[in-house]
Image (tube, rainbow, N blue to C red):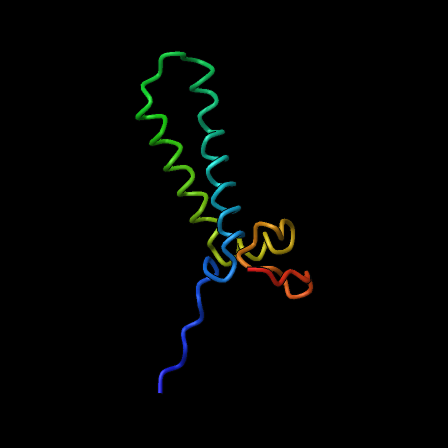
Length: 91
């Protein structure tokens, strides 16, 4: 008999996954501010690549169990799941 596999948090809490991805993308874009400030005619491909890489790295770090626990304590709206005592039972 197989034990059921729990649904991923992205499926159980899609709005949290969306917010986490948005935060990662904004932080990735912020890393471009020095480049934007220094040059006006920057080739867009390296800038977009940098934002994607930084956002991906931030998303990966936010998925680490220790980081998720820290987020659960200090930024619960960014945690993968609501805390049991938060009263948030939405999908």
